Image 1: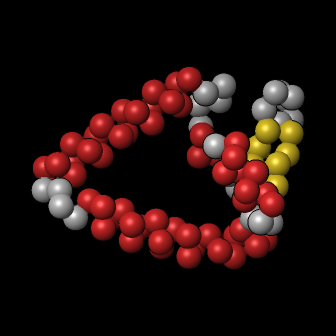
Image 2 (image 1 turned 45 degrees about the horizontal axis):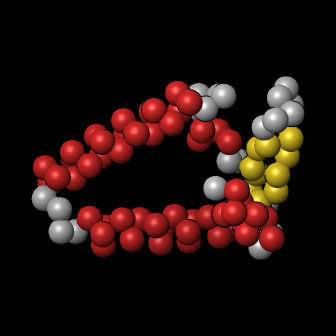
Length: 89
């Protein structure tokens, strides 16, 4: 994650800001340029998801989504703050 954030920062897509209450944490904020390309990146991600899950049956997709939700929940429980989605603004 750190390497990806570093590359995105170098490309002018995000900036790092220290957490207000916990100096060990750094928040990632999209820059204006990052917000500009966000829709294109999300569209490309959605297209890739459709392509790689195309061979799966409907039941397999449901099971995959369920398994991934459990994994994400476990990561959220390990995080200092339980809302990982709130970290990128």
